[in-house]
Length: 507
Ligand code: NAD
Image 1: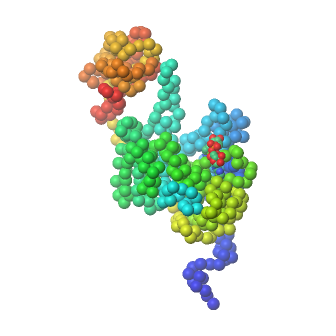
Image 2 (image 1 turned 30 degrees about the vertical axis):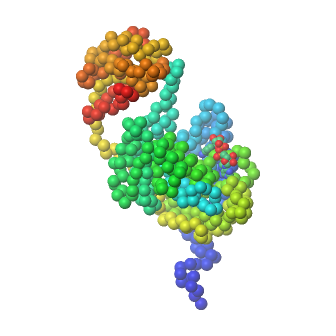
Image 3 (image 1 turned 120 degrees about the vertical axis):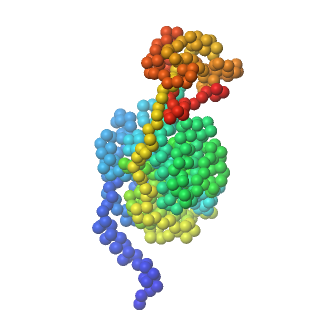
């Protein structure tokens, strides 16, 4: 007799498992690099890999050491030089959290790997699992796509005077184009309806302005996807209040860093979120939480964040079928009330388990689909498209029209500095304005404006005509002879006739 379930395409577990094992044996394994990390890292990685293997993931694992032990050997980057060979060969890195040693001199391993491998997109799905995990936003399902390499994360900082330090915010057109395109490709691939961009371009008109401009340029190439832009402050407030109104959010590095943690937390728990770091030459997958040293070695940590990071990895390497099995088994475990201590809730949870038993519970549900939650569906080869970036912009006509000379003047008032520098000339260059912390203080200015010891003196030709580098060198020598310490200069250029520099506040 042929039963209904057989004709419906469902095969009994024994045959299915045998088939899976055969398929696994004949299909090529994907090489990946794995690091077990510090603190709870080894426990949650062991649990995660156990689930992946039981689900039939086709992986050829190369293990490397990162983190505390490596830092303690005196390697300030937290990774051995030889480990880069593994990362370059496999191009896929599944990484457990590490403990960053206290004190100076140590570099963030995450930033090192992201920049070293050009992982320009950080993708973090933030999903509510109501009513099984407590949240005030039951309908939340937001994906944060954060630019991962530049902005203030270049870490380019200088102390310039007694009173003033600076950090450079670098925003490049290639990075904006890559991250915005990635966000739209992601939305298209996963059937998302809307991409929202957050910037602060009402203040940073050039840097955040470029990010927003690129967003508006690229969005029309995806007409089926709605687009919107919010200034980041009100956007962040709306996200915290009504996250269900958002779908995919693309944003520069610093705002993305802050708001991706906020999003994960209001969805339910930072302990449940995984993230992907994607580039043209590789990808890294991890949990968003740290190494929780106080919980280490007790078999209590929740492996869910790393497991969901691993699901993103399986999709990325084209094993969407396995990703689907793992993700649905995990959803079923959560809705069955099998919870680790961090999400355990009396009255909702059924059983409090440790790391190992949680992994066993997920494995026991492989092949099952959730009933309360919508089952996830991944296609094999379902990763968002990564196109290499090509420079398609025409080169602008660039002209040097002036120079900002920054001075360290310990004691001085705007009028005094202005009157002395008015007589310092080089060719057609003349002092036009003086600004202090971005506010115009000479000529004119408000007596109430507080002035630090850091002054920006703008020299241009009176008719805004082109100047030469020789004139700048001559000018600096004259400034020095007039008794002023110049700490840096910024060339003032026009690009196709448009000024490539901002005006001082009040200018
Ligand atoms: P953390 O995320 O490690 O832990 C904060 C608290 O959250 C823990 O005390 C614990 O109560 C809870 N928690 C976190 N993950 C959990 C899990 N999987 N299961 C159950 N509970 C969990 O943050 P921290 O204490 O600020 O940082 C500890 C170390 O981790 C630091 O050295 C920090 O630099 C590092 N860190 C590493 C990464 C990374 O490797 N990607 C990220 C963040 C922090």
